[in-house]
View 1 (cartoon, chains in turn blue, cyan):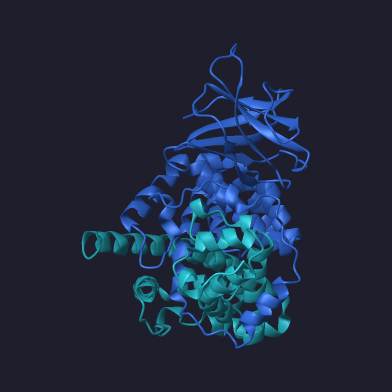
View 2 (cartoon, each protein chain N blue to C red):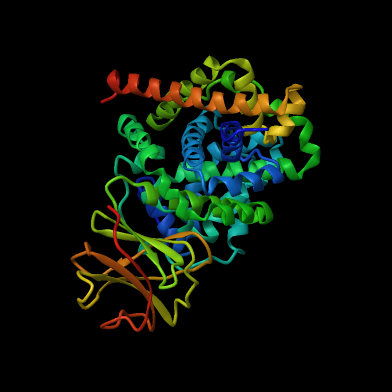
Length: 274
Length: 201
């Protein structure tokens, strides 16, 4: 008979394998079911992921074969682009100390002390990862290998958003209690970590983020954003308001590309936790 | 849209990615010039096959071209994003291509003793210092832990495959990976703190 402690000892080993992308399918499925409920394992995954970001630098550069550059450019000329949301619409913040943990810019080494201080805070904020729907993500990873890298990148971006120090976050639920997204307000910008918001037609509709100073006050439109895919994704809100701190946030989907005077129908709402 | 080489040399990665969103293939070429060698180095290390490594790198840059918005600058550097993408694609490749299997253990061998690349630019010097620190930390790990991590990360082996390769119980392999990653993280944090208190401000 195994105890809970014995079981968790095994899961901590699986957590490292999960982060290393080194689990067999059955272990991956088992761990996925566990990690959604276990903050300790999520903390292990976060730590290992951080360390892996450093290990990769042990590998020296190598000269690619002649002609690869042309091959890439030639292939690109035949590959259609996903222009659903141009990157220029994204929040133009580049480097805060916490965000620079993996940033290597020419002639500008990262500030490691600040970087690691940030990561030490992971253990405090990592329970927020529960909102990410790890189970769905990881099962999709197994069955959609071609899409795995993109999913991983979006997942990691979502983790970063949900654990960034100094942010104000509000998890939005539908009236029936379903969790749709988390609003992250920081430094005058707003990102939406979407978890279950259906994609909209960016030519005909838009999502609008609203702020409510009190339960009875009229909502103020804070900005618009589009959802371009199902599942976890981080979307930058095109902020049009000056004041961003509210007691309650809400989201609606509207016809047209502009925010109306008031929401036609609120899909989900929530109050900030920090 | 045309861009002069002199101007392009000063353009940030972020701006080049923005230009990808405008369909600027010249920007893709510049990003390849900046990051192609590091991506290819990692892909070659994992696949141990020049042809597959080139395919991986091509897929990585085409992915960025196809969806430039997949990279969000405020959440990390483009170099890290490209290397993470390269790692995933390379691991998927070696698992898919049976004929690469026999090379995978070699790919993972003695990563801590890989000779450094030539360093002549400030960026390369910094990257070299970073690489040296990682290799030093890897060297300090017990052999079983280093081997398990290297086989998984650079060889693309699953935990069970590592157990079979090293003739070790699966539980031992998992414990080695867990303890090794924890130790490695501590070593890198320690060396970082020393660096911060010493040569870097």
